[in-house]
Amino acid sequence: MEYFGYIAAFLTTASFLPQAIKTIKTKDTESISLLMYSMFVLGVVLWLVYGIVIKDIPIIIANIFTFSLSGTILVVKIINK
Amino acid sequence: MEYFGYIAAFLTTASFLPQAIKTIKTKDTESISLLMYSMFVLGVVLWLVYGIVIKDIPIIIANIFTFSLSGTILVVKIINK
Image (cartoon, each protein chain N blue to C red):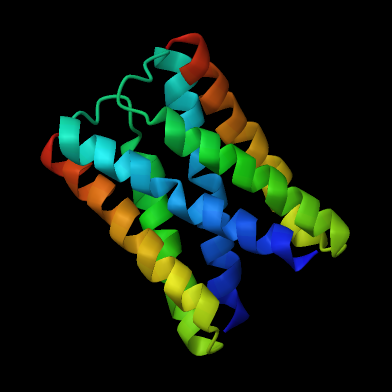
């Protein structure tokens, strides 16, 4: 049953890849919420800190990946504001 | 140090609220990735299944909340496609 957890973690993490690609390609961030990505990126940084503190490798790896993607979307959003 | 985890979980979950409000208000989903929200909502459903299987109340509650918000965004995106 752990499979559900792994597939779930993969999907919710990897889902930011198509959004990051679309955002970089089109530079269009009109309908994307600045507050959402500000909260999300801050949350991911805290997940990363938490992962480092409790020494949990999957949390660390997943959140480095998510930070890169959601951080990129946030930067494009701020530049194009 | 568990605080980091709780604040992180709150931020990454609640971040979908401003996006859902913006999307419902403006009906504009042009720059939102359909593939991102398709993968994300499917991932959240699997998180929910996983939470139910392992009987973890925080996972269940967080993912019911996230499913409502991200599911709403996905529905508006599909309708306005």
